[in-house]
Image (cartoon, rainbow, N blue to C red; front, side):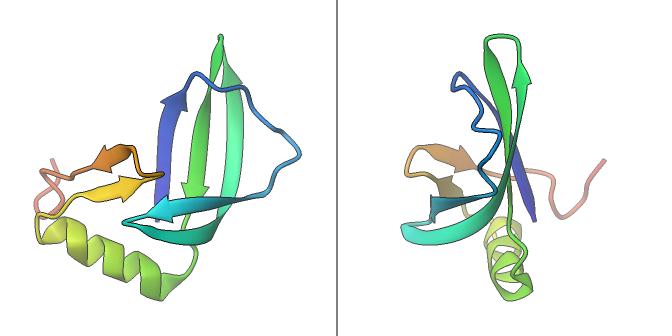
Length: 82
């Protein structure tokens, strides 16, 4: 599972992993970052297939994922993508 978002933070190009809160549970995720203008695009990759399936199930059930205790993810069309 890949989660990407725009940020006003600058990239740490040497960083490969990040400790991230997902639904009030701290996890170590793969991390990448691309500088864009005055900010960046941050990408977290959940490579643990069991955990990715749990989060996918939450989204398909209509629940919201909370990343870093501040970013809410809700997938309105996850069951029937257009």
